[in-house]
Length: 446
Image 1 (cartoon, helix red, strand yellow):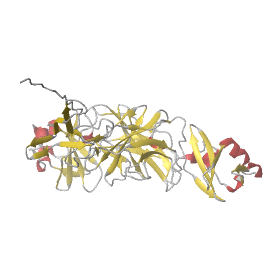
Image 2: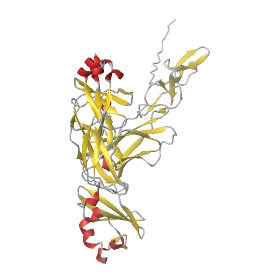
Image 3: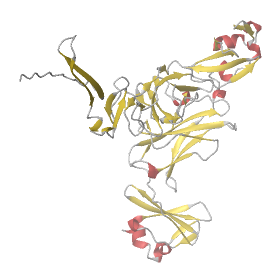
């Protein structure tokens, strides 16, 4: 008996399940010789037996196509097969976003605005600041939740030149898989308004002072948001005169109704910011370096922003901070500093109700290799305080009276040979101090 074999080749194109119907007839007009229907299932996604098929764990079947756990959507890299969350739909890994820089605003800030259509309550956006494509170290990255507020940075904290951008990557707080960075437009710091601190409202118009690279201008904005800018020279010449009237959205704005700051009329006036000098003092008995700010300004709104520098670079472990007028200064514990390098402090002054900053005023440098590394050991015996100091290899003990501020010192060598002997008595403000009463630390007598 002659046998014939007919082969039907079935090719899977990533489709999980195929139903194949086969029919064989001798000619088109004779009876059917053979007919069969067969289901083919992709073994990567299904385990089939005579009792039926079951989907394998750690797989997804999306639009009848088989994917394994962790496979990325070939048409959208932000979606993935995650069977723990869904076996039939793509799961979005992170919110889709764009970012843009806006400002300066009237409170002197640049805002990184994040745009996203994602309404998930777990959507988060991590914002980082860059100047000339390098991370800006003085501005920490931070995370914002969905909403219109964006993330802002004070322009006074930024350098006076360079291209500012913000970079944002998104994630879900319950998943923590970050998106690629969405990079904003660039803002040229050399051209933006550095100051926009004084805002007055006159006849529904806003007068905002700007200071850009030495030039101060006025921006007049009406309640509809349309603005017009005038220069300092124009303001100086016209603001006392009705000729200073400007047209803004067909409204006449009279500059005589506006009282500009003294700095706007003359940026060189001392009233622009407190005049200061600064010096670095120490180490003190509590092991600190003190940045002392000296000024004759008695205004209660005078403030001083202190930053620390090591080898003329911002010291990252010490945040800048603001101090009020007074003799206290700003201090930094030597234990927080490296053993070598040139330490300086730099200070900018301003008035808290004006916020126009002075240039940086730098202190004299202090060589940390030569500074006193004061031991943290202070003992009080019979009304006297014994404070141990270490300078390089030289160790001394400062003896201070609890009744008077004067003090006397004795070297470690003398102390090591005499402190068990009453001959080690010292005179401090007319009082006899017996070293036998004091037990120094081991490194002083060792």
